[in-house]
Image (cartoon, one colour):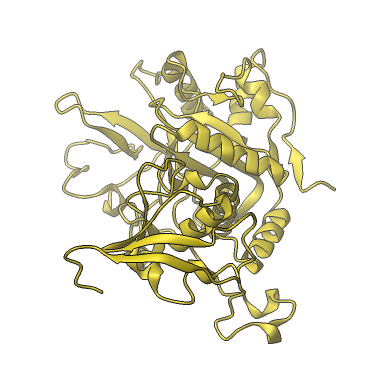
Amino acid sequence: MTPMEQSPGLVHQLSSSDEKIAFFRSLFRGRQDVYPRRFESRKTGKSGYAPACANEWVRGICEKPRVKCAECPNRRFLPVTDEVIRWHLSGRDDVGRPFVAGVYPMLLDETCFFLAVDFDKSGWFEDSTAFIETCRRMDLSPALERSRSGRGGHAWLFFEEAVPAALARKLGCYILTETMERRPDIGFGSYDRFFPNQDTLPHGGFGNLIALPLQKHRRGDGNSIFLDDHGIPHHDQWAFLSTIRRIRRGHVEDVVRKAEQRGRVLGVNLPLAEDDDPAPWTAPPSRRRKELPIAGDLPQSLELVLGNEVYVTRDGLAPGLRNRLLRVAPFENPEFYKAQAMRLPTYDKPTHHRLRRGISASHRSPARLPGRCSSGPDGPEHSHGRPRRASQWTAAAGDASR
């Protein structure tokens, strides 16, 4: 049996509205008891999303903005229905107002039916297509959507059944890691976040949201639609989505377990559980295995400049070495994990602190790594099993940390 199953039934552009809506709901499935609706203030022009509520702006009941929706005792959230999806796809609600719906990916039991990866900024298409190619190498069936703004993209992976959000996000981290092995210039510049973006649900909250695709008005602009490998919209969006294979939970668990054993999860060296280690008696005290050797030719020496950060010249860096340096640079943000453990909102807290400048393909300026990466024999220059001597260490003027 293959690790993924074909989406049931072929839906195409000539299918009935009911068939399209049923298929759409089965694919882009999140919380069913509540959904976010996009708003835009006529006074300020500010836009955003808020949970759709039957009591919204009802005098004497709704106390926005003084009381947040998640804390309101009078909230009456509206569920996802066929009509809601019909309004989204047509772009208008039942009274003719513009309508855009989103979805909260994380369910109440902290599982999800899909993982979406957000790519942003100028290089979003090249980086997202590299991510898509890595998915295919793993026999996963992704879909690439151009975002509502047209200035970014979402790579979608769909699951046959609900999987823990933590597991889905580890799968995404592994795919990013493997993508950077082939394309180290992807860095942390274009990748923005996952949906869902946390492992647990905040008290009274919903987790992060993502706008649903295929909204009519944005489709008219060439946005919020799915693209082929050349960035051209699929002629029949529904027929394309019908070809997407949904991943079985067992396959996700197997892929993630092997990735953790090999230390291939981006930015986090996860200790192995005893039950997952085939030979736990051989593991070091930290329970972390050594990285695999870096593939490709390595330079005999590197020129580094030690200042407020470690500056590495890009010339002569093999892709595998650039990727290893990039992977060792991000470090976990304790504020994110503290908030998550307390089940507080994490929307403004990144999981990792990022480099201000990634290791890109350009050689005109040096790559910059946090100063902690120069900590000695356990640093990246020794992680490939063959120590390398830096040809020059130069203290920047005014550096007091030396």
